[in-house]
Image 1 (cartoon, helix red, strand yellow):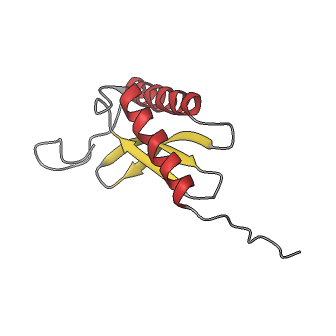
Image 2 (cartoon, one colour):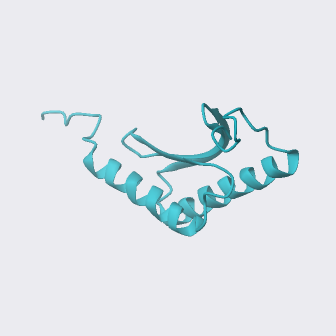
Length: 106
């Protein structure tokens, strides 16, 4: 996590901290998956960002739009709230994305 060190240099996560962050990301993704219909694809991974390693949870709506959120170690104070926010964003994205296939005239 950059910016948390007094000199602004990158702070590497220990293997245990990486496991905790990966577990938190998986928990948020699992809860978001429970809240959404099966047509939505939900996943999580750890990603190196300029301000450090973050867990990122992404949801692809049936219309193809993606909603994602990232958080650092200790930032996901209430994973259930974060999962609800991501699920709501994905549902809104699906609602606002027009169908990719135009109806065929008969």
